Length: 603
Ligand code: C2E
Ligand code: MG
Ligand code: MG
Image (tube, rainbow, N blue to C red; front, side, top):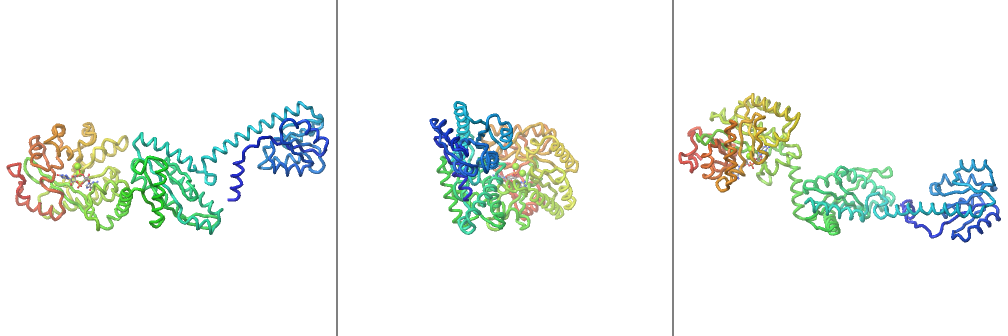
């Protein structure tokens, strides 16, 4: 700290009005001559009689120029010059050496010692004045620039950590808010305060406290180095991290977690192992304010709340965001244990062939049986599982369970039907997936013709190059084994025909959003009609999802849609209830009443 203070005050020094010239000569007459020659030029003239005094005064005054006599008893001019050149603060001081007329030897030695220029006695009045004026002016100019640079630095940066200070932060925030309002993005402002820093400072000392602040500054910068974030020091032990985002809860939770983690790692200060934690408050633009100062204030309030909540944690300024972030965090953590805790359940939703009224298949739909929250929809947790990579294991469990269950039903003597399993794009690592499916089919002994995989359009469209070929090879191999391939949610994506021809697809599933309004919305009716016709011309089988009303059934029957799935017949059912349905259809295989506007009797 003391050293730093010295630097800071040094940097703040402004340039004095007059240039200071230090005249070093052991002869009084020589000193007097120079004084007379320069007296009217407006300099601050200072004198030294010998080498030692010269060094001392130079150190004290940091002059703009030194006129240095070569020949002096004791420490001579060369030695003084060498000393100065080796001095960090005075190394750049302009030195003009005074030699006897045409003393070449002295000049050579002077150059070696680091002199900038030479003049010989007796002085030429005009020459002395001109040289001194030029050198002092250049030196003042250089100092001015340095001072300006330093002032600009001091105005914008924190001298301890080299991070932007509050003023530069506010400028950058203004720019970020401007940008965000144009691009409709969010800006997250994280105010981070160290927990119990005062105690560290008091017990260890300020110097160690400063070291800790520098270490924290570095860790913050490293943690967010790839995301274009601004890291700044707000004051004492408070820092700010600011970044743009379009997925607030997800991005912020992630960043905050890693910041808290990184900071709390052990650090070595003066050979002592130390640990410090932080509390983080978060405000977001535009939700929590549209002005820089308000956003900072709100994040600061949230930070105080985080400290109040037990430290080493974070709080959003807005209660709603807090809940969302917490919910996601809990979800993510608990989801990781879902397989070990055996909390996944598979439900089965019947699929009915319209022409015959037969149950010809079922879609396996996963649910999470949460011990406190009850049954959680896949819409809520599948995207999270995809993000954290857990979908690979969950997907494998689903495939395995669906195949085993289907085989069990067949063994129990029910008429064989196929089971459709949703496969996420994230599961598509072709070689692994093929191995997994083969292994599952062998273990369950299910005939592959009773398995259908539901893929999304995006998988077949987004892949290019090698992976596209790998997927094509995988699907071709699966088809050759007898496995069926369906495109799920058809119509919501690109609905491109070309990939339907390229990949060996067997079934199209018309998305629920079209089916919903086929009886009321002309466009949806037209699109659905077109999709069905297209499927027929490509010899693909077609399933309508989300069928809820008899009017929809009538419309789809009229367009010769083959298979129907939806609440009209049945919701997705747990194993026990699906078994009951299978029992009923074994006894009476026609499910649909002749009068198609009524539900079939067995349901
Ligand atoms: P999806 O594959 O398109 O499944 C159809 C969804 O529509 C199911 O929602 C189903 O319950 C619902 N549904 C069926 N009939 C009707 C109806 O008549 N009306 C209405 N309003 N809804 C109906 P669910 O079970 O909530 O699943 C949602 C999505 O989660 C699925 O959409 C699928 O994309 C995904 N998913 C479900 N299980 C799995 C799985 O095991 N693995 C993967 N990767 N994703 C799954
Ligand atoms: Mg599906
Ligand atoms: Mg679907």
